[in-house]
Length: 202
Image (tube, rainbow, N blue to C red; front, side, top):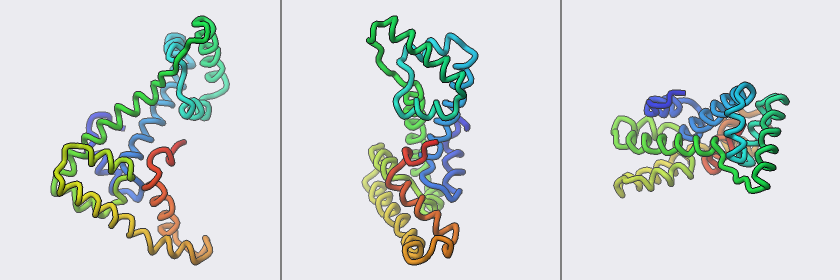
């Protein structure tokens, strides 16, 4: 994923039949970060020691790390973590570097999203997209944008949600096998709209 040109990344994700483009880009960064960490933890004792000195990862990212790392990598990290905990006589505090990376990424994405919304040419495609999840919508509304823009975002959010009602109604009255992919996709789209990024974990 491009770490500098988020505007184009957001535009591209918005045109796909997915959920919130910011959630999806943060999820990509999360996977890339975990994949890189599992690689360097195996071969770099210094990185293992640094992560151990940070208390490892938060609960969520420890579980995600365990899923993608092999048993050797998990064992090496846990040995380093146990050693660090014992050396500090149990005073280790978790400072998850994955969470820190994602917070930085998310801040940059929100800033770019606010900049995009100022562009008139962006608004039409945004209306036609799935839009933002509710959490990211609130974050964008906390940016320095005009009251008219906040109102427009709320009205657009309602419009984007209501567009899914026919597909959801079809899903509620028919067998799963008698519905189209697009109708079934509406369930994920609306759930992600309310739940945000955590619904998209590995």
